[in-house]
Length: 250
Image (cartoon, rainbow, N blue to C red):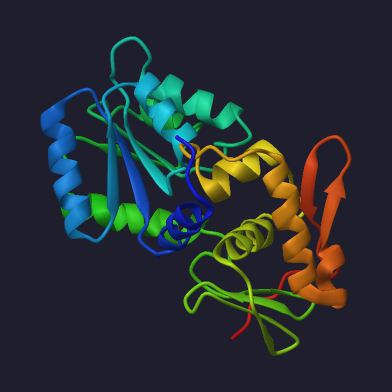
């Protein structure tokens, strides 16, 4: 489906809301429902998948903030799903929690080789939510929940404001999302396709040259002092290359 520019802008603006998105992957509907209720009550946005294949399709459409994955699933196990996610550059940084009835030490060691945490069944919803929040606090980069600053360029995700040397900048919703992605992943080169997936969303059709147009607009909005922070990577796409070490504004 091809959306109008106003519809795309509206979708991007709405996607900036701070609700964290969790993808539950479990082949048992009752377990998914129990987890979904607990997480929604805690203020999370929840998506569900009943197998690894569906989960990978969900991740392709939109990268979640965290995934809860059942180890013992048919066909492709949760452990193998974790390994596949870790091997892919686009999904390697997603925080993963394995859910399993296996409590032996060897299983925990194996699970923690690919997942960020390991929770043994049965567990209480309160424990799960607490562990999930702890992992998100530990793995969330600066610029998602708290301000991030490079060389006087400051992004405040709470107020969704960007300033240069204390002076506010005017960015469109797409430009803001592009800059936030760059500033939360300094020195990482993104292809145009990856930027489309992360900023516009995998379920929206936008041509790759649209990325170049918005990069030019973003550079212009950043001004002479900071426009060169967004480098063109020949044959790949774009990279945010800060001039100084990252600092967090107080």
